[in-house]
Length: 127
Image (cartoon, rainbow, N blue to C red):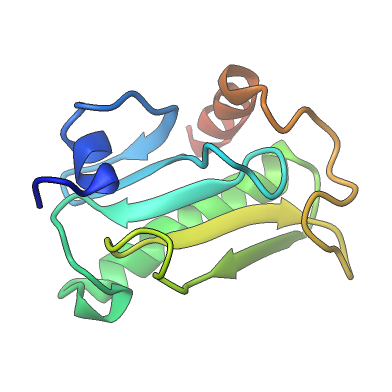
C-alpha cells in the first residue's frame, strides 16, 4: 500500500529501530512507547487485519519470540500485547513489558525514548 507507514518501514523508506526480521515479519520499537521496549510486530506484506495474515501460526511464533526477549531484557514476567488495528491500517500486534497490575508507563525501568539502548537490549536477548 502506497501510503501505509508500516509498509514504508518494512520497505526501509522510513527509518525504525528494528529488533527482529525474517522473510515475512518485522519487529520494531514503537515511536510512542507504552513502556521501554514497546514493539510493533508486523507482516512485511500489507494485510489490513491480523486475522487476514495467512501464516498466522508463524506470526504468533515471532510475537512469542519478541515477548520472551522482552521478559529477559526488561526483567519482568509480564509482557502485554494488544491487537486493535485502528491506529494504522496494517496488521500489527503491540508487545510491551509491564509489571503485575501495570498500567501504561508504569514501573519498567529504563528510558521510554532510549530507542537505541532498548533495541540493543532486545536484540541481545534474541540471539
